[in-house]
Image 1 (cartoon, rainbow, N blue to C red):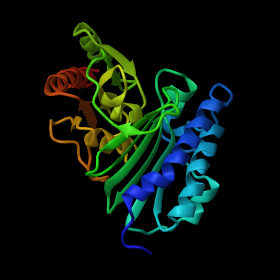
Image 2 (spheres, one colour):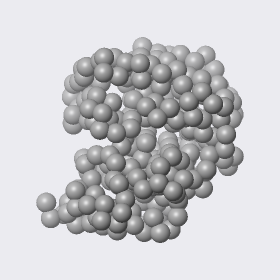
Image 3 (spheres, rainbow, N blue to C red):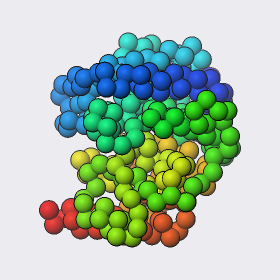
Length: 280
């Protein structure tokens, strides 16, 4: 087993697989039904479609060909999962369709396909696709990030603060969403993966994710945080501290913005959401 894994090679080898998985998800939209997993605590976690399975396998087959030594943290239990070792310094985190229930099946907003590489618990590379928007993001720690639109070649990512949309959690209390509207912004529900790269999406300037049914943003929900950070975005948790880079560190909220003013706005909205939640 190799002690080191080249994060740049990881992105280079898996970027085509990300595009293929995104294409599969897009092609199957509206043609698949929910086949809920058993013994899950919520409908969101139980949601599963044939598209989830097909997309994950489209990622795992080339992953095993190139990096058979990595450990998996995969969202679904598909056939290729058993081929990977249980122990490794390197973990590959996969969410084939992030937002299956609300965003893929119910079409409430953008969903995502995500693939991340972590070494000893800290992300070294991340790939995120927004299939409907035909956007593809990738980043390697300390080396910046790339964005590709449609079939165009990748270029360096840059922050976009010109739009008025803010990606928010689907269950963010309405009082918080109304606050953002009153400030002149358009809150748009989005999957966690889409929220994590919000400032990189044309027309979107910030993202606010608040976990209500679980105590912390999941390891899959953190993949895009590296991508935004490498583009120069500001990322904080609910306390105003930098969003934690380690997979095991708890954070109940993810706030991602292009500038301090927008970050303050997100904290104000989050404060309203927490008060509303506490009084509910």
